[in-house]
Image 1 (tube, one colour):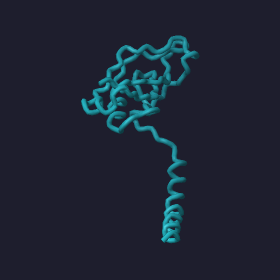
Image 2 (tube, rainbow, N blue to C red):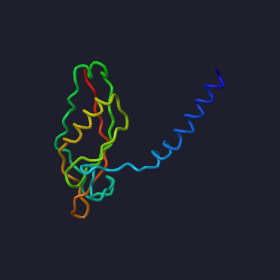
Image 3 (cartoon, rainbow, N blue to C red):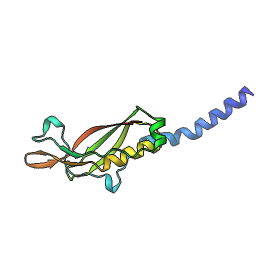
Image 4 (cartoon, one colour):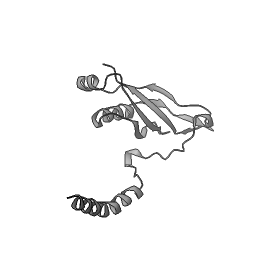
Length: 133
């Protein structure tokens, strides 16, 4: 019994290992709405930092608020010089549906891009969404 289990585990490992290696080597590809052609700078490199005008709250369901009360979601997003929030990634998340609602809210953020040498630039920011009950 123990030998057959080891044999099955070994066969699975041999079969799956090459596929996992291939997946790990493929770079993440940006979708069309994820691209930002405007140069990116750190906050200390710009002449004028970006200014957030409106940061809508995610529309969590009552169930989400009850289940994840007083927890938080942390996102990293590129505030593109074009005025769009792109390349949003979950740094610390909860369930897929809750994360998706936070990402959706992040896409709706309105801001004035930062500037360097009189030109609009992109900047990475960390976004934190607290779930209140």
